[in-house]
Image (cartoon, rainbow, N blue to C red):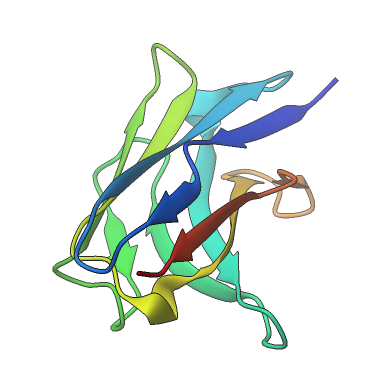
Length: 119
């Protein structure tokens, strides 16, 4: 059974930091491209950051580049998102996504973790 479980969300003040984790199981993690998406209330889900299966290719949304860092540990089947200098506009539910390198139809989502940036 495929599972993606996000953790690490919470309430943080503007300028603060959080580290999100996505624990994966039920598939060969090292063969999947991994991404973080977020969805703010009343808005569409958007891509935040993406990392290739090997970790060698990384992309960021313009809105988070320089503040967020995506990483993965294939030995632990875990992906991370280090979020620094958080802004109120970063408030959203953050989702973990996995897509197979060999079959894009194998596309999995976690249930999300809420990040709230507020004073």
